[in-house]
Image 1 (spheres, chains in turn purple, red):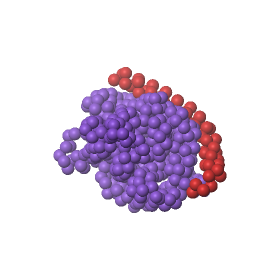
Image 2 (cartoon, rainbow over the protein chains, first blue to last red; image 1 turned 60 degrees about the horizontal axis):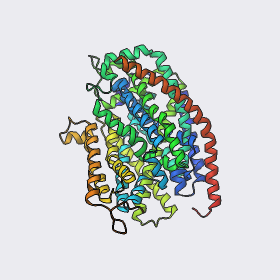
Image 3 (cartoon, chains in turn orange, blue; image 1 turned 90 degrees about the horizontal axis):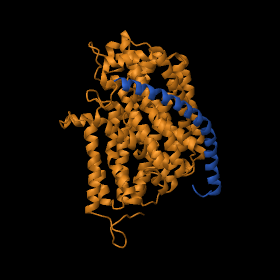
Image 4 (cartoon, helix red, strand yellow; image 1 turned 120 degrees about the vertical axis):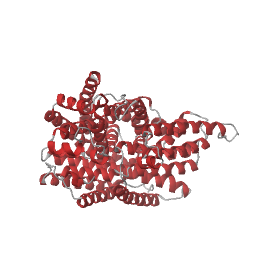
Length: 519
Length: 52
């Protein structure tokens, strides 16, 4: 499916909106460049000198996670799954609240004073586990963000009405260069400040957009249309007939809940950057509403897009079959939200919201680029070099990795065919890391007998999650298995091997006793 | 199905209302946190000028 497919669709995006976008993005980059003067060492660069206070920590947590890509994949889930998709946000909010109240995983990590999860691996297990875990984490994380540029390009095309793929590619490349410039120079300090600005603009923007959508479409009309397109599976997430069902809901408790707030490095790095464990608890408690909203509001906008595009004569034939069923094309359903926004928002407002979402796109990129480059530098190159790298060398290597990851994103985004909902692609690619990492964190923090051999086995077993990617699944003839069942099986395997490996090959303390060895 | 329609509708309204309040609180508090962050990093480097 090419962007030409939507060539006949008008957009409200005009010259004034281009000006708003240009001013907004230029201002964001200028801030990133300005704060470069505050960066003196690796701690400033990666965790902002561990000086984040509660309000800013919450803004950067939500701002970093409420990116354009989150909006796009959540809207796609709302579009294809209806109101039943809300269970993802509900689970994310409740689990984050529980993590905030109990301090599960994140408080012990902050108490240990680590900057990254692999650093914890070394303190708890061994240097080898840290290097292996760091490589796996970076591989999974970079693959996970591999389609961010593609999602951004689809958004720009749908919102602005640009249908020439060459122009879209040029715009995305320019944006990537801007992100690389201020992330390479400003590090975590620029990330938190731009996240803060983006948080405010985007929060106001999405609340206003929701109000406009309900006003134009009408609540009763929205509910009735979803009912006629999806039926009961459009409301009941436990219904097997739709895209969800009990196994999917359990998978969400693990992924959208525990993993996204307490295991995924880009969230954990903010806990590590917090001023104290008390701030960590406040951060997670207050961010729980953000974790709920970051899924639910874009999903609601996806539902509104479903209703609008279904009832619009021009777009109905593009997104629906003659019988009124949704077209099964992941690339196309990803275009539903920007197409809807381009129709329903007035000139001026569309520019502001477009700028906010594009800034969000840059914000997610900067957080992720910084995160994976830091992991590679701090947890792979650093330990391999025996801790002999100077701060200057570490910063230079981090910046080189940011550049290299950026180059990979351009190539992967152009080459890879999606074949499944973007959210499900991200879960599977992320699962390569987090299924094993969860076992290491859970057992490493709360079970004294967890051993180095068990840790290696759990990390390796997580790699089986790659089977959940549609092209891999089809190549292996496993097309009938869902990503959720593959992910849950891999998680169980990682936990089982962690326990088995630890019992069969326990660590021994200096006195020869079986038990926890911390460096 | 009626239960789910009512439940999701209420959840949406309540979440939006709480989010609006959190946005205002974080916007105001976050501004002073930024000033504190920058001065904290500056003072860390004044106290440890060799930490480069």
